[in-house]
Amino acid sequence: MPTPDAPDPALARRRLRLSIGAAVVLGLIVLSAAVGWGILRGQASPAAVVPLEEEARSGAPAELYVHVLGEVAKPGLYVLETDARLVDALAAAGGTTDAADLAAVNLARPLSDGEQVIVPPKGTPAADGAAQQPGDGLVDLNSADQAALEGLPRIGPALAERIIAWRDDNGRFRSVDDLLAVPGIGEKLLDGLRDLVRV
Image (cartoon, rainbow, N blue to C red; front, side, top):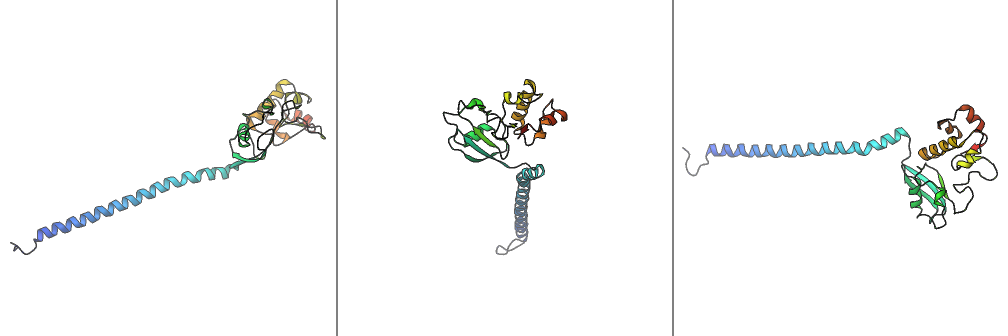
């Protein structure tokens, strides 16, 4: 039996075990926290990288550069989101003036990179952006109205409506060959239009 002044060996062993157990528990908590932090960081990183990888694969621009002119408060070049519509370009330009002919532009039309938007004043002939440019006499597929399109050979009201609908849904025609994507236009009809239209 130990003397009153001597430490109890059993008590000392218990304290040692408790100290070791506490150290192990503390070590496990620190290790769990480190592993948990690593897992959280591993989950967060791909979310930031995936859109960039998808964008690189698709080749789509991250932004749209749009030149806004005409009856707007602040004409100029604006950088917009890729899903921007014409109304967004006009808002970026400070809105339209009182003289703007809003019936001549389709505010819901999707925009494309490098596009120029012209808001004409009220009373301008071919107000939707001048269907024909002076000098070359060609019909611009990106700004021609129904009447200008119907003036082309073998383009009736229904086909003119389809051309405008395609333009509204898909943005600007990038080449005359894009007309092949319009239902009802084949290679033969396109060949007859090629020298009469432009983009």
